[in-house]
Amino acid sequence: MERIQLTTLEESGAERRERADAAANRALILQTAERLFAERGVAAVCMAEIAEAAGVGKGTLYRRFANKAELCLSLMDRQMGEFQNDMLARFQGQNAAGLSHLEQLAQFLEALVSFTERHSPLLLEVERGGLSEERLNLPHFWQFMTVGALLNAAARKGELVSDLDLEYLGEALLAPLQVDIFRFQRDVRGYSLDRISAGLRSLVERLADRD
Image (cartoon, rainbow, N blue to C red; front, side, top):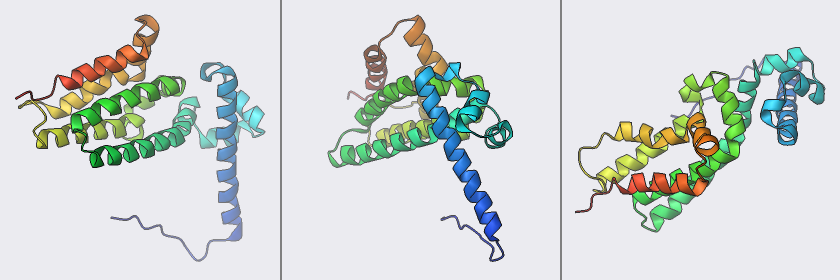
């Protein structure tokens, strides 16, 4: 059901200006943080430096974002939105071409490997800030729902072996892409992106019904 936005006729011009100013400050803070992160790295930039570079008070900054993790999560909104739109367009093309749901799943996981690599600094800060427990507000939730939808579609089409726990499989396939595990694979184990992608694809292929 479409959400209805309620407004009041009594809203004053001052209130509208206040909301506009708040939105402008938020956008300025995010733009400034994104620039500083690109120049120096996420871990090297503190909230006070963001406020100073943006020309806003610390109180203004902390009213918008309680900590750097919240700010990083907000920065992820645009990137995640772009990724979602790109994947939805790809799924439409794949469905039109008759691609199996398992192949779509393998390609989705490969795309997630690249996405996680590119945005690891932001995702790590979110993880450190303890926001990973709020799963409904994190990129992981949409990823889990997408993987689940592809697995269920594959099951309906008879592409999977029988008696699989699809809900658990969705979590298991995404576990290597949790940012802390992903960075362990990359930084400690030294796995290349191609190796991680190939490994995930091999897991998906082993779910297929060969009969």
